[in-house]
Every structure is written in C-alpha cells, then in structure tokens.
Length: 105
Length: 85
Image 1 (cartoon, each protein chain N blue to C red):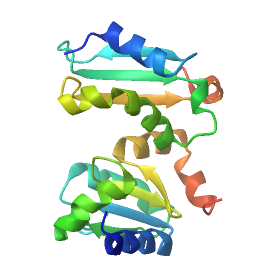
Image 2 (spheres, rainbow over the protein chains, first blue to last red; image 1 turned 135 degrees about the horizontal axis):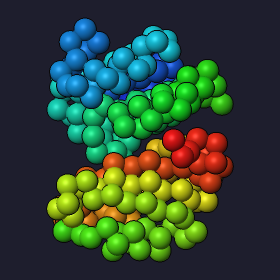
Image 3 (spheres, chains in turn red, cyan; image 1 turned 120 degrees about the vertical axis):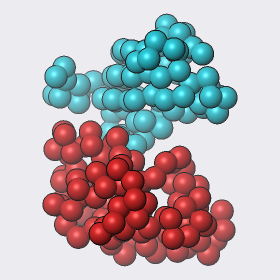
C-alpha cells in the first residue's frame, strides 16, 4: 500500500489508546455497526474516531492496512482488535476492558 | 453453495484437533454460524483466531459460495471457562 498512507495509519493508531475507524463521527454515526462499536468503547475511555466516509483512500486503505474487509475497525494500544462482531463478543466476555487496561502489554 | 458437513470437514483439516459446530442459518448453504474450539487458538487474540478460520475459506468467500460466517472462537481453555453458555 501507499507508504505515506501507511505511515499515517501507523501514527494514528499509536497516538491514541483507542482508535475507531468508523462510518460517520462520534456525534453522527452513519452506520449501526459503527454506532454500536462506539457505544461499547466509550465507557472505557476517550475514543479517537476516524470517519472513513470523509476520504475514499482511507476507506479502502484501512482495509488493506488491517487485512480486514469491513468497517468499523478498532485499534487498542496500537494493536488491531477487530470489527464489530469481535468487539461485541469481547465486551460480553468482559475482555474488552482488560485490553484497554493492559496498556498494550 | 456448500453443505455444513463439507465445511466442517474442511475446517477440521485446516485446524486439527478442533471441535467444530456449524449451523446453516438460512438453509441455503451460504450463511453459516460456527463455533470452533481449537488448540491452535491458545494464546491468540480473537482477531488472530478468526483469521485462522477465514484463511482456509478464502476461495469460497471470494467466489461468493460462502457469503457469511458468524464466528465464535475459543481456545480449549477459554471454552472450559466461558462455555457452554
């Protein structure tokens, strides 16, 4: 993939403990899965959101970067955690907060 | 279109020693639910576990023969602790 875009993603996911690539933004989610992901993450701390609808390069680029076919996508402490199904399952198991608390270790 | 038994055998070949339970959710052979308990998942994150399941199924996913797979994955240790629910 484009090295500038890759560097941009590297920088974004490392600069914030929780990063959510979503459709829309925190105030106006444009998709139910994105909205659900946001709801699960917000109680755990500040969520940095990236609206993939704002830039087609980002929308396709993040799928290549994560090697994951769908949006939303969640990164916690720089590490790709998954999409909305995985997020829900982790939340159900109580493992989502552990990931945030672990500080990437 | 796939049948659950073909898919199950395929997953068992790819992930030896696993326990695979499949449910054809629409009865049309292209939407499945799967629960996979596999020793290969030990120490892996959930996204890594899902990727291990998806990898061998790529040709079917790409061709559209397999349209959707709702996955639940557990290492044997996780399954002992969390399931069956």
